Image 1 (cartoon, rainbow, N blue to C red):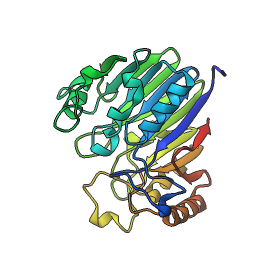
Image 2: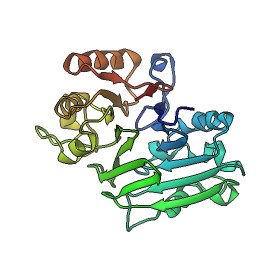
Image 3: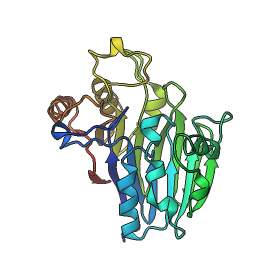
Image 4: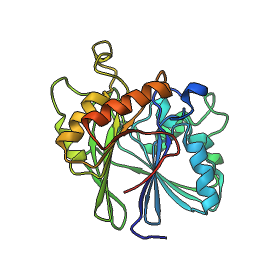
Length: 276
C-alpha cells in the first residue's frame, strides 16, 4: 500500500432522505457518508445510509481500525450506523468523534440516544467491536494518527454542524457538509477551511432561485459554492448533499453549469473514488 495515499470515496451523497428509482441511477440515492483513506488509516465522515455498504467493503478488505467523525446528528447523517457491520465484529476497533454538541451531549450519549428502543431494537451494548468515543469542540485541531491533522470549525446549520479540513501528506481535503451562506458574503469560516484544498466537498442542496423560500434551513447552493471555489484557490469542487428531488438529469445540468464557472467542479455520485 502507498503510505502517502490520500483517497476519498463517496458512499452516500444525498441529503434529507435516501431515494431510489431509475431517475437516480447515475448519482445514487444513499444519504451522506464519505470514507477518507490516509495511508493505512481509514476515516469515515457521517453515517448516513451509505455506510452499510462501506462497512461491508471495509470488512472484505480486512480493515480492523476505523474512525468515524460526525458533522452533526440529523437523521440523514446518522441513520446507517446500526447497520455498519464492523460494529458487531470482535476483531474491529471503532472510534467515534463528535463536537457539534460540545458541552451539551457527549458522543457516547448521542449514539445511545438514537441506537436504542423504541427507535432501534437493541442498544450499543450488543456491539462486539472495541468501541471508543472522543469529544471535541469546534476550533480544536485533531490528530487521530501521526501525520493526520484535522482542523475543525462550526458551520451555520440549525442545531450545529462541524466543518472539517483534513491535512495529510502535504494535501488538503475540506468537508463542508451542511451550511447556509449569507447572501452576497463569502463565509470567512468556510473560506479558512477550504483555502488551497485539493478537493472541497460542499453543501449544494438548493439553487439561488430556491433560497428565498429556504433561508433558515441551513443549506447552501451550487452557485455560491463555485464562488467560494474560485475565491479560495482550490483544485476540485464536489457538489454534495443533493436534495432528494434532484434527478440524474437535473444534476447533470447543475454539473455542466458549475463547470462553466469553475472548471474543477463536478456533481459527486455514490461509489465515486478520487485520489488526491
